[in-house]
Image (cartoon, rainbow, N blue to C red):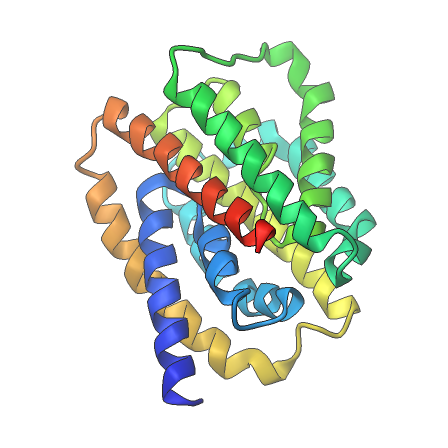
Length: 246
């Protein structure tokens, strides 16, 4: 690997890992936003698979709520898989750039609502219907952009999870999304063994950054965490939108 590529991958994934460690998401969004400058979107998404899978699995397992979250969120995660596979053709380029632009705008709009006094809340009885729908839409956006944030994140935030539950639920949802995306990429012969050395470097950098971010999150109050969470979404959305306009 050339020195420039080594420095790019390391710096990008350390930054993405720190973001994920603090707010529980953002690794693929930050990494895709920067890597897409130097790599084709499908190749950048393939490079994300290993660090995304390991960091999200770590996040999902890091807490006492996993079994209960699996039982509660399986409709959402089933929808994610089906939506990703159904929309896999979009990752090849159909609407890819505009998909990132619209996703960025939607993220900024959601972050604006979250930073305001408005609160979105869903009744438990609506989850069997809205969960699969939110999952399928998230899967379609994942296939188009390589980013699995909307509408899964606002859905999870709206069902009344506490701070640590929300972070663990995000890890679970993103793990499922990563596996579904990996299957789609493998089917398109984009996720190959040639990417393993770069993926291992990205994984090491992401884990180091995530550990730093987790240390910061442990010192945050619920109010400050919420501020960081939505501010992070706002910044990530702006990055995606600007990249989509380029």
